[in-house]
Image 1 (cartoon, rainbow, N blue to C red):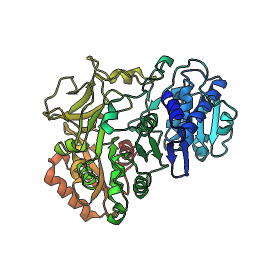
Image 2 (image 1 turned 90 degrees about the vertical axis):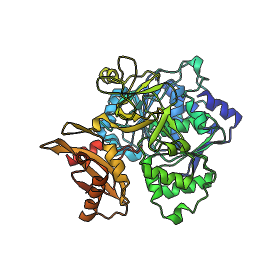
Image 3 (image 1 turned 120 degrees about the horizontal axis):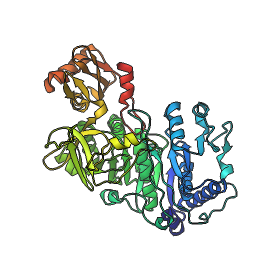
Image 4 (image 1 turned 30 degrees about the vertical axis):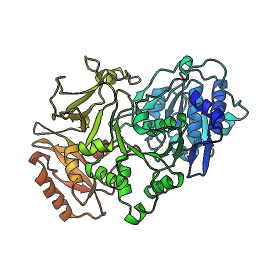
Length: 504
């Protein structure tokens, strides 16, 4: 937080964040002063270091103001996805122990479905919500200076996306006041991406997700400028790169698919010459999609693999990826190991569970069993993803253990089938799940988004024939169903559980 305070003195009028959808912006001075007002107000309400505030907000200036202000007051900040179901929001509020909530008035229907009796303080933005005070009343008359006393600095208290169950919280200790001048985030990313005071960072994703939240703050704390959209629109994103001369951006593979689907006339209509680093993560990117993006944008795409747990991170640049298509790189620190279910090391090329050695320790909040399951007897940690290493130590993702299909005693990895489906010229996106089979236990079932929107029995037969030419018999989908879109989280992660609920 002191980084922002120093920048507010050094470059007070420079924009820290621009919100093009509303035509608003925050200078470093305005963001710093408003954050101080929030901090003073929360302290005056009696909130003590370590207590929590939850944010049920879209991408607005107030999201940043409340985040910076609450952390200055020593509070834990829990952003909530506006697309979670009421039971999921209720779980996070209850599990995190938040004592304050700020919600957008447009989400009043969701708010009305929640039990808020444990929330001592409630504030609304953009209109009235019964039982909530307007957010501006929290800040009115509060000092614009750093709050008094040596309060520790708060942190984000993030929850996983809940793709395989209820969201899980990852709570980290408060930052001691004496360490307030140290960077909050791991610095391994800085040299890899080249983020500095000249950075103009386009963030077309929701701030309540870990990656856009952290990268926006990293940009601002480094003196750069963030351009934050309310939602993703492919053509509008290209226009913003041109308008603001964006140097950096962050995407998920689904966004790449939608960008590539734009007509050539639209794709070629914008000047993207300022754009020197496109970051992507969150979900595996089909090889044909990434190749097409590299053909269009050139070797500016940088991929990383990590989790909110912070146990490790892998990076890969464009040149290396072209040499190792499909890889997510090598670890930035520590080591990666591939182990079987008995904990034995597997040789290059064999799929097993991915374990990180040498990363930071973490714990799932209020869930010691899940925490214990994330570590082995050597202290290595896992996100429960499956993958393999090549002879040079480059990591390739396969699937999550929960998504594995067991057919006739054989392990089938959906990602392998999805990669083959993605090579068919008529397939825009594909997902594979296991469905019950009386003889084999499970068989793979494919859900396909056709490239031109057209679907028929002949196309389904052609896709299955394509699979027969590239896959073993057990891996051929027993059926093809066509969909207009695959269910995904706002971070771009496939919600395979939704497909399983529907098609099983």
